[in-house]
Amino acid sequence: MKHFLAVSDLSSAEVQDLLDLAVKLKEEYFKKGNPPYFKGKVLGMIFQKPSLRTRVSFDMAMRHCGGDALYLSPNEIGLGKREAISDIARVLSGYVHALMARVFDHAHVLELAKWSEIPVINGLSDYNHPCQAMADALTIQEKFGKTKGLNVTFVGDGNNVAVSLMHVAAKLGWNFTIANPEGYDLAPKAVEIAQEIAKETGSKLTFLRDPHEAVKGAHVIYTDTWTSMGQEEEAAKREKVFPPYQVNAQLVSEADKDVIVMHCLPAHRNQELTDDVADGPHSVIFPQAHNRLHAQKAILARLFGVM
Ligand code: CP
Ligand code: NVA
Image (cartoon, rainbow, N blue to C red; front, side, top):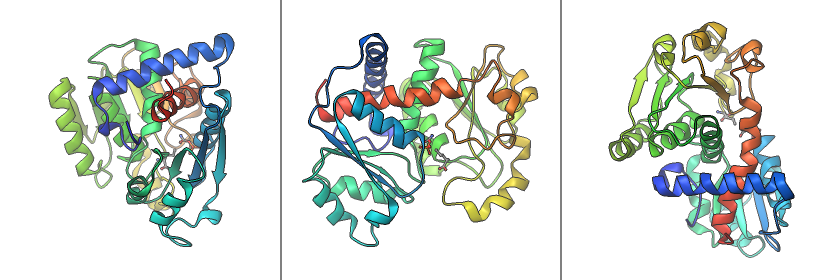
């Protein structure tokens, strides 16, 4: 594994290997703390958009393992504006040991990886959010074990988070269903990739409009914001389209009785997810957020080649 840009770049075995390592690192962290696996390593973190979880969990993942992280704000770097991405990648390759980048345009993280001499991690783009998906899979596996054929249902916008969830589900042999309004479909390219993966793993992919039909038999209901970062000018329009896709107590009651409710956060409470569900017995949104830390330690460990 040279870079970590998309779950679909990994084999099913590599995805499972990262999850197994994450479990090990998590157990070790809570028992006695992690030893300094990343001693002498610095992660450069390029952010073109705001972040709570990605920024803090990567920073802490590095610190827990004896390394360090450097936050590079949108204004400092001016990715592709102040300076060409190819130049930034080559300059930073001489200063730090890996790069994490949160970008608007997916092509920009690919460009960084193309020119970088060090590993590049995709910390969210307009296309996907693979680090989130690894934490999501870890959370689902903690709840249900390494069970094939789980039903994972995404309700809402066919966005970056949905793409990576679909890909990780397909890689692990889980069935993936999405219900989204017309005009807010998953990227066709992402669907094609998922269909290829599903052929190998036997996972079933279903694309629906009706959220009620989609949650029938669901073991996981996942939702995300109706308006992603960079789409703010569409917010008013989206707020008219998406209310039927709200994850509320009624919708949750139509799923499997042991369903878990997931959200990558930040949530717009009482829009896509009601308070009673977010804070209710089915919700795993905070363990899910905490799992970012452990999943990313595994990704870093494999990229640094220290474990
Ligand atoms: N889920 C997630 O990536 O959160 P942040 O935008 O706060 O990093
Ligand atoms: N889909 C959201 C995810 C935030 C973590 C966004 O891109 O803004």
